Image (cartoon, rainbow, N blue to C red; front, side, top):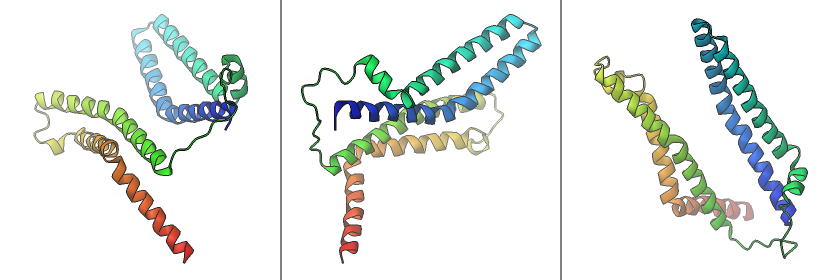
Length: 186
C-alpha cells in the first residue's frame, strides 16, 4: 500500500462517517430551524430569524464543502495538504495478525458506543429526576423517559463490554470462522 492510497482510503472513510453522522444531524438541524422560526415569528423579530437562517446556511455550506472534498476531491485534498510527501518508504507493509485487527475494531466500536450513549443516558437520567420532582410520574415505568434510560444504559454496557472483553469477542468470531473453514474443507 502506498502512502497516497492509505490517505485516500482514510479520507474517504472520513467522508462516509460524515454522511452517516449527517443522517442524525439533519433532522435535529431542521427541527431546531423550525423552532427558531416559530419563536421569531411569535416575537415578531425578523433580525433573530435572519441571523439564525444565515448561521444555518453557513454551517450547511461548510458541512457540504468538507463532505465534497472528502468524497469527490480526495486527490486534490491530498495534493494540497501534501499528505503523501516525506515518507522514506514507497510502500507500507503491514504485518498484523487478523485477530489483532479484529480486536482493535471491536475496541473502537465499543468506545464509539460509549461515547455516543453515555451522554444521552446522563441527559435522560437528569430529565427523569427533574420530572420526578414534579410528582407527575409516581413510578419509573410510568415516565416517558424510562425507556430511553434503559436503552442508553444497555448501549453503554454493551460498549463497555466490547472494550473490556474484546479478546473474548475476537476469540468467538475466530472460532466461528474456523468452524466455517473446516466445514467448507470437508
